[in-house]
Image 1: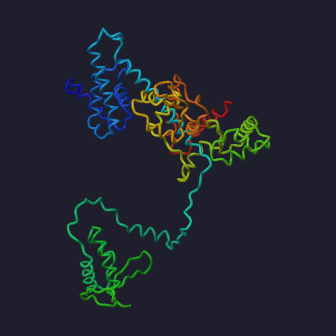
Image 2: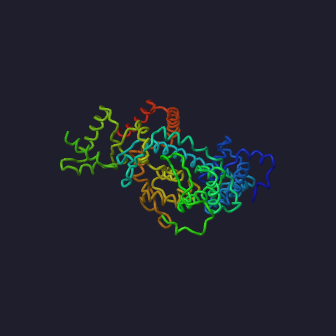
Image 3: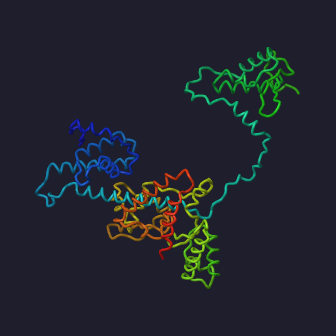
Length: 264
Length: 209
């Protein structure tokens, strides 16, 4: 049944330019018509062997991914092509219509299908035309009620200067398993150390050295936790300006497993 | 004069195409003929005063729609409702039904070379296709035809708006030209020639009666 084993090499090489992806086609007639038209083949004199081979080649690899019903439709056409090829090779004078070209019925179906493809284009044109007329029912988009508009106390210049500070997006990170666990405790002790050396630490500095999200999250949590324990204070002079971490009321000594008893 | 205003008010308030008989219900003095006369008069008025809208015939009904040359402006609003585009399978099936009306599922599948049951179900759900009868064959299969919704979706007056089979090549050629003209002028303000051509197409439909 497989014609690819039966036929000659040069043909299969000439197939290569017609690599097609099956999803693009509505069905076997669509695919067949594409193969014929793309090669300027005379539809009334279809080289069945060549077309069959190209058709089967196009199915390779695509059939498994298809729903079985759709795959069956393509296979049925492949079988029809092979049958026509056999009839061309073995005319049967004993049958009443033996002198009719076995390809005639297929040609009729292809031409009919092509005709309806033309109609499809006419309908597409009409649909596009109709789409340019608008009826009532046009509603200008309004923000949904319930969300009060927020006044932004920020000038355009301020906004732009902030926007300019945003670093270029990093190149897409390769996915790799986390090499180590980052704990909030580690970050907290790092922060304590930094604060014991400097009077103030820029909030940004906590994130800068490490690219990964885990570090950023742990640093942020550590800073918030220390602020809650009043080991450090967080200051920002005005909205969107730099955030500074300063030593708090308590010193940065080794911490006990405290938390809740931290008074006001 | 009064007829026209009543008809205009009815068309204006409607979001869908209205059959002239339906419009005639607005007033005892109205009937189908008077409604059609009023629509013709209104169309002339809109034309003369260069309104941005016109009354178009869609299937058996009439609806006030904007003229196509204003589409680029309206399309800037995300909230403008846009008609959904039909899938290739749906268009293929509709093409066959429109030309072979009435036709059964098996015959549709023979032309397409693929199963048509699921796409038929969708088209029935969308009311683009309707059951128009039963065939003679085994099991008296259902026969399908396109609906008035089909005409509305494609902006057609009736099925004779579709080109006859032997006219297809000509129509396709014109369509090709129109599309090329459209792509050329896509970035600029609407191209007057293309606009005129489209407007003509729309008006030819409504003025032929």
